[in-house]
Amino acid sequence: MDWFLLGMGLATLLAWLFPEPGASGGWLHPELLTKGGVALIFFLHGVALSFAALKAGTLRWPLHVVVQVSTFLLFPVLGFAVNALLGDAVTDELKLGIFFLCALPSTVSSSVALTAAANGNVAGALFNATLSSVLGVFLTPLWIAVVVTTTGASQALGPVILDLVIWLILPLIAGQLCRPLLAGVATRHKSKINVADRWTILVLVYTSFCDSFKEGVWAEHGWSTLLIVLAIAVVLFAVAMAIMGAVSRALGFSAEDRIAAMFCGSKKTLASGVPMARLIFGAHPAIGVILLPIMIYHPLQLVISGVLAQRWARRTEN
Image 1 (cartoon, rainbow, N blue to C red):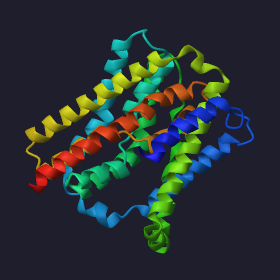
Image 2: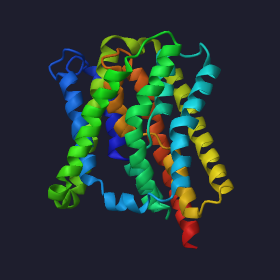
Image 3: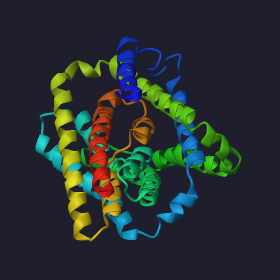
């Protein structure tokens, strides 16, 4: 099993055992640590991002439309439907977490890696995954604002987007500007940068759960909640993959484009999801519950997609 997946479990366990350091007012100063970690993650993404590769995938506009519609329209609609079916069976915080999962952008690294492993359109996957990350800065908080408004809460959208631009987009641009100087270093130390990126995310996972455990939010949740979220994650992933496959075939996509569409259009990012949750929801005491769906969906999508990538690669090689 990937050490990062084990690390997420360990970070959650540490938050349960020692919540005080990472909770609001703790000696780790999570309000500063969170934003610094977010900026570091997106700066590293900016350094690693090759626009030469992105340019190669820009002309396949039907592929781009299908992927972005799936990410920012199909999934939110599915989120509304799931929450309507759940009714009062789960808490409002968990419903918000389910919709937050559905409103998130696609992944970058895993979408591209899986598309490459399955012999799909790598340039198209890279373009769509990156475009999704940028659009998500604006569309994800917009969807969240719609949800909390319809539930009687309020969401100051402007400050949230400004915060996301400052701590996500600007570091990404700074990384791109530094790329001529750091690209060689980033290539030589790619594995170390990936490790640093993942460790930063684990720290954010830890601080995200500290307030939840300190405030006793999890006292009303148990194994039944985990099983419900797991079942929802399976259904969401299966429906998204089925729809993307059907639409791709109906539009006459090549096998390569169909693979890219299915992987990019079904993924949801944990790497950006945790930082965005910290910025959007701040010190919400139930942020651990809100993050639960994406933390379950993330490993699930990787395991199933890994199996599919190997199977599709064998088909295209024969």
